[in-house]
Image (cartoon, rainbow, N blue to C red; front, side, top):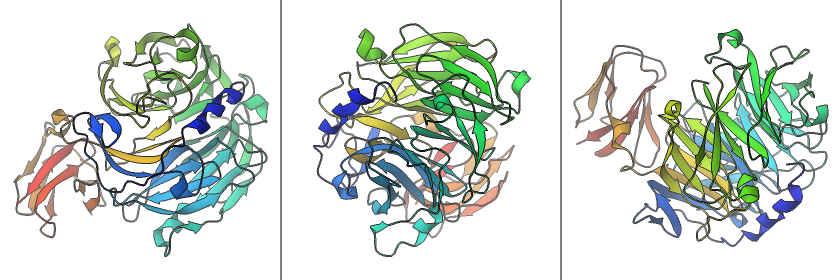
Length: 472
């Protein structure tokens, strides 16, 4: 962040972790090894030293469309690490793409069309482009990778935002367009092209850009940016890159630093984290929820205060869950299924910074919860962690939806799935989160031949449910 950078020098005090944990460590008695937890198991860990760095920051993920293998992409002080997590209890550090210029505590990465797009606050860094298909055949890891392409339309940037539906990337917090979004056409990923920017609302610290499908039909199909702009939220129609138009702005009480936010999946509510409010005003971790039913007239819906005083950083929504990286309190998982009635509640956590849930801007920076397997990437000052929901966290997550059946269960290996509507591609995971069977096409009814699998517990994932399956 621009005005707060000097205070974050505290981050280098959290480099005390020096081991690599490879075996799964269940959450037992609210502890997973040395880490406090509730409902989430530790799959694996890599320290900064294991990745030849002295600091980790942001992260993202990539799933190879050819074989379903999952990879973690972790920003480091001196580059970007690529980690094969297809065997989640024995992850492989494949190597690093070095920084384009100097080292920096700030690095951000997003993914589009099997390419990673990486920015940093290192001077002159620009945007690196990396073809992720190179990760398929790494013979002797770790290796040093080379960038596939480079965009030099800006130098340093705080964040990179991508709308995967439109094929545009947006550098925010650059020295162009007053720090507002810098438009880059990445539809041909290896040949990024600058297409202007938007400066009217000044500096954007972070943003989410969507092809809008929410309740305000005035903007259906438009490309809309929600900018977290230090002291306000800016909602901007950026469909026409040559003529972006402000829709509205909104502020809120007790502003510290308007940091980052994310839509609910129906694009009705927006969950915002203010990075400095806990420090400045002394309340517990606060998330401000906005009602964006009318983008021209956004409203504050309510405020949620967490269970501890930790300072929040990045948060993301998957279904009815909000995954929040909360610095010294680690990952906090909140149920937002009743958000319309102003209700949220914490249902689980994994604390990567034991012994302190106090305010401060060091600890867990990011959580990436979007893998189909349920594996969750955590990154921050003390390295990379991979966690997964414990089997006992939510029985209701595995209920068979109405209009769908899976039988027999238990099964000797031949399983029939019937549904009233398309259930999408089907994936079968073992208890480690590895894909062991996958269909390629959406379907209503199909028969799975799983006779090649060992006996035991598996999870069958469709586009609307995850069900337990026992092979006998």
